[in-house]
Image (cartoon, rainbow, N blue to C red; front, side, top):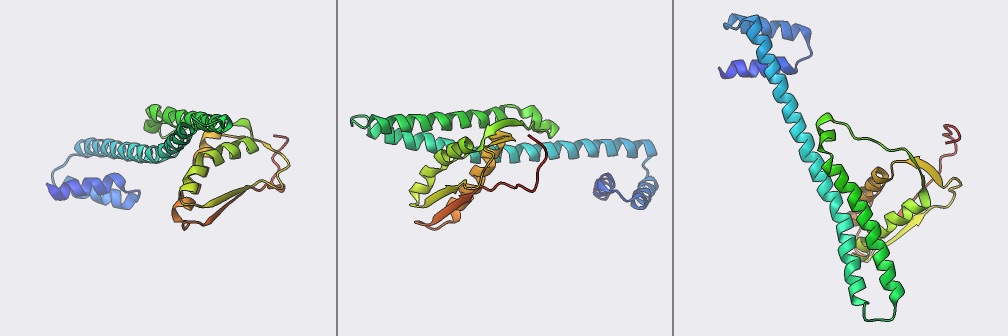
Length: 212
């Protein structure tokens, strides 16, 4: 019956021992054996896990589709600029565009690799890398990925790295890039046309965790 289904759903999600005992007694009074109750609870648990996995997949793919747009916009934007300068003598401009397209392509590959590793979604696990990286190089690549979007809205964007004494940090390059891109995409979205966006990177000297 419908009410019994609801009771099983409540029972499978409850952590209250008194409520669990009371619901089981109620179900027994309605003709269910203890074995049938346990079997139904296993089914409810499996359904809940499947629904959770499905939601995790949907959220992951939604997030990835959003993140894929940024490097794709960079590739298309700089490809158009390079194409418009092919007949000019300013080959440095074309070379710069090609370098930025390459950087965006590498970032896109990292995102696609995440999408392909669907098994990590199933397990609810994402491996975090911990590699020594140059913070200045990271911020330069980041700026190259987002500057064209800010330019579309005639926004001025600056990155402040003053005060950074240790340029090498241990981090997951791809994850940090994704976080920065998501933050700046929101900044670009909600900053008026012609506005100013400041990205300030600070070093916390009071949180030493060793030589690394």
